[in-house]
Length: 223
Image (cartoon, rainbow, N blue to C red):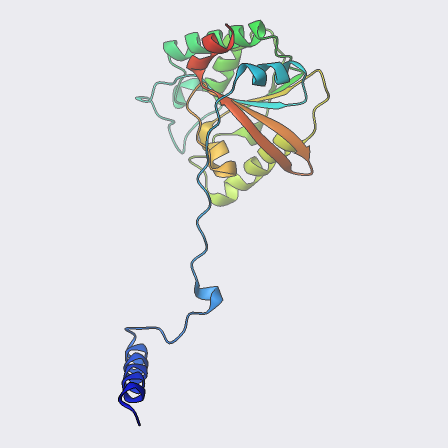
């Protein structure tokens, strides 16, 4: 036997010994390979063309509520939907921001045909400031998901997907006003407070993320 053959046999024997001792696997099955990481969500900033598209309708707009007072967190697990003192509140700055967003959307001539909102006070206060005369529909299945179990989140995520994917007639847009963690659970995107997120519904549970309008972008878009 040649020296090269002996060398190969030695390394084969060494590999087998290490494998049996747990230091080296004999083989890696396809099922043992780690799943590839999901691609990171990439935020796209809206342009004036985005506003032009929204004027024609057919989109779903998801607004995260205005700025809140983080020194007063939700009183879990004793949050009372009828008692705002048990919930993280909209701040004075958040109320002013919400008023500005509503005014900007009216100036942009973005038509809203229906509005579905979370039952929490910070969302209801955002809507009251931004769209004071709009008949919003309070939806318990748009509740804040961050403090919920996986089982409790499931119907909220499913309902959000339904609202984002159900087609909207031309000339109108559907609006949802809710929370950042809910979108994070659904698509891996955690928008900042006051951000408007634009989706194109595709039907049967499908939708396409189009762009985001951070709260400070409105003046540039309206020029």
